Length: 243
Length: 339
Image (cartoon, rainbow over all chains, first blue to last red; front, side):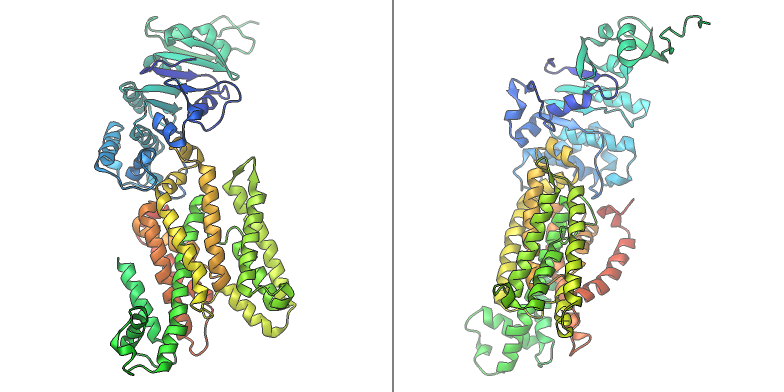
């Protein structure tokens, strides 16, 4: 599979289908047993750790808070790959960090400790940290997990507004449809479909991969899905129940 | 800045305190006189030889050893806490002190000759390193060092070694027991200028490396996967930190015994004061550890004079209430106590 430069690609699939694993090969947390990952024609395994961290940024789901940093200090960690190991924060670092916090609307939380934040606020801090890395590629692993509906849309439209390439694992097919240029459907570690979301997400595909019934509301250009549990014998619940 | 001044003041004060009468001014003169040649008061007979000897040969070495041990243990504790990402970690968590104790107690009980002429300090150092190596090997799996396995292996091996120490202690002559206890609880009373060399080198090297790594340490706090995504090789960094913290702890323990509490609590105090960012927290930890242990040693040899209290008893007895008080104050959430 290929992600076009500057596009937003959604990875969807049931739990355990390999979304996170695929993403982890991209930011080098695991080495693929077969195949390679290239960014801008360059094999990511051939880069040094710091080079890779200047190429691909990750917004992880959560991070431990045994030793707590403030929001600003956490976002500043995103500047680490740009520095020699020891070095002061430059005015440019501070500007980039301020900008990242403003874009994720956490500027007023700058001095709060991470442990005191809500799940949604923490998630936005993690996004700000990834933005502060200023990489051409941004990886998001279920970015909208702890967010309320308004913040889910805010986050996705913020991501949409970025210049770089975005690869995001998403659970919500409606979000994926609305904000992704293309989607990749995974099941049991394999790609089962890829393409523009409105074409890929057919009721048939959704039933086979996710095991739920989907009805399409809205028009074909901008579909909205409603889901129902699949009837145990496979018949659609819209139909008259059998005897 | 404040801590640096405090350390200098403590050097002079502890030079002046003891059974031989020396004034603060004279103590200061002796310390400066030995370091800067050609000071008039060194040769004009205003200071007795006894005073000079007491300050330069007994009080100063032990004060300096207290400072080095405090700084070293505090730094090792801070590194160990971020290495295993656990606030309860301390320099002895990998069995360093229990290993050192077995070595030292063997020398005390069986005599140096039985161990091929190994001195107590050397035996303690060997024991410390052997214990660390064993823990690292036990905790290694698939080429990675998992923090949890390291802690568990360290605790288990530490308990095993402690039982050996206890058995040796209880089965030896009564006269040896006091020396064993003094080692186990830690003391700087046997310090000489030459015994300072090892800890000094270890401390200087560790401080330099830690300063270079401060930003990576911040990154390591956020988890292995996060560290990788920020360009830090977590496993390699952890291995380096382990070696450094163990060598540092080993050199300190082999000359000063198992002084407790400093390595656990001083890093937390530093975090409460300046936050968890290592670039600010490590200098405070090192200087704070030095000042804390110098103060504790001053108390150890004064409050029950002429008897001396083992340092480890004092560090815990004075340090624990202070730490608990600080923990209850506002601002403690900076150290992750807000939850």
